Image (cartoon, rainbow, N blue to C red; front, side, top):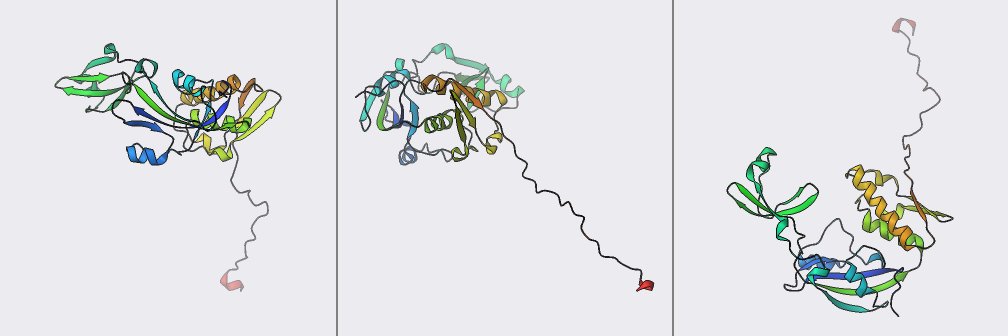
Length: 254
């Protein structure tokens, strides 16, 4: 039985470049370590996926909907359906003086951002730096090894899974996230540590919007999502009673 497009599942996967077998993403820690891409800040386990959402490549979602719980499948995705074909217009030559103005010494492989576009330095030649703003997997056919672990029925688990995928704050402890449901509203309290976020307010707002959108678009019972910021005074209460001060008499009065 195929998976419904509104279902939530736990999914294990490993993504590889078809031509080289290079692993670029996985939910398995041992695979990540063997490939040399392990992230110490990432908790490796099956990801929560809203099947009808935009979490993964559209073509990959199509392939997942053909499967059922317990299925393991390897699927191939052509470059045009994966990260797109390479676009020569996205390769730019930037004068070295532009880097010197910002006291930056470019090197091959250096990641950088220009006007919101992420790129990587390909060559440094005299007074010019060649920067490639194509996705690093553009032009490459992709292979995914998939395993559908289980479906998720509990709405709180669904939302916590979306928070883990989209919010991306290493200080966030999902066990401390509180979710309450009132009619068709989901009220989310991320906890105190969520406030210790090094991203900009715009980035945090965008992350919350993504969680909210995937929630009300993929959970039929939810029409609205509210994020509740909570702060708590942990300082000890001051003593109301004055401390008794012993009387000290001058030496000639003892």
